[in-house]
Length: 244
Length: 244
DNA sequence: ATAGTTATTCTCATAATGAGAATGTTGTGG
DNA sequence: CCACAACATTCTCATTATGAGAATAACTAT
Image (cartoon, rainbow over all chains, first blue to last red; front, side):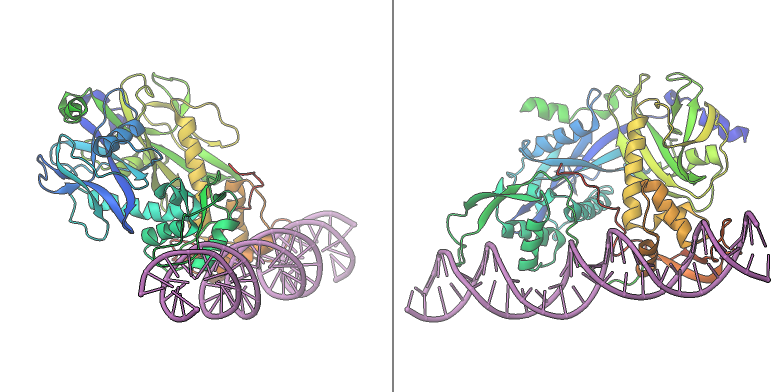
């Protein structure tokens, strides 16, 4: 196999230009619904279509920095934002301009302010996950994988706490699970579970000022605990699905 | 913030060259120990050091194809190899030659043949995970993340079956878990668990030719079932660890 | 006050796990 | 050929985790 061995030694500088971008799937909860940050493209290709915020990495910038910058450009970097790498995409034709490899990031954040459009975007907005237009490039796929990652991460990490305020009630936390997973959870069992997992939440000794708008007792306030992983995990209710 | 908005619109073609490589963390089990495929670098930088197999992507090639090609160049592409994307790394100084963004892949395979060195490698070999030299570039970190991913994936997917032959005994499967996790498992409980998870394995109706070399009954043979996920998962024994 | 809401705690049945042991088969060494 | 050790497989029993429903009590609005 001289041929393949020769090609393996190919000179990298002889390659056509490859550009690397980061794209961010930023999720937050607003008005009880899961939202993703989108920008309306102002330039070709796909001008006028909505897309994930993102852009080219800079020469002196590491990947996570680039992701944080892109997010900050639209939202003003909020405190307590969790960012993690999602996946990379590099199919030859995914961007018509040139060969682009995109590294995607997933961000969870508590109620963020309304975004403002960056320079290359016509508009930027938080959009409900369940009412989305078709996105530019392969961003539908990236968003889909980000959502699945987010849903899975709620199971075995305490990241749900990054969607709520510094202190929160068990019911608010349950609301995060319910809106991200899209299923109702048993209030009593959820309560028992959250309090039984070591390091998930810790009590503050305080309660809400008053009951809910429609009544009910004051709820105790908690803050995030120091666990990085939930043991045992808080699993999604089993879907019926057959094998496959 | 005109400044940041201006920079966000930066022309990508004005960027210094970025090269994209794929690196593969290929794992297999040989003689009861977990091994990773490494190549000894024949060229600068890091000539003489061991590294993960990898190389530059080609212009017409998608990322997963590039990973499969790199793996095949060293091992001759074996059947039943599972490959999945791991993560990407792009810190500005990680390769002294130029800005390189590396997309890493994780591969699981049953007993693969001895590798042969590719054109740019002085040597290639399966090396025991527990007796490794310090690797070139940031490959120690990539390998570490690959190992953790592999250990986690055994918990909730049937991927352990990709480390064994087409048909296998429950004890062989248990051996995979024990060597990847590095802990002994209770034979009886493991047996019960594997057979109780729907779609994990299916019986072939056959047994091994004879008992083990030191005695014991013939073991039943199984093949991988059609489940993609294990429900409920087969969790690692809880480590004692305090919170954190 | 009264009814409707909701946080929190309980109870009870069932599922899943960890540990240890029993049962029966098979290879090895007398 | 026989006793024994090794090992696959099955069981038992205690403990833990989960799902469902209900009880208790603290609040708001009427």
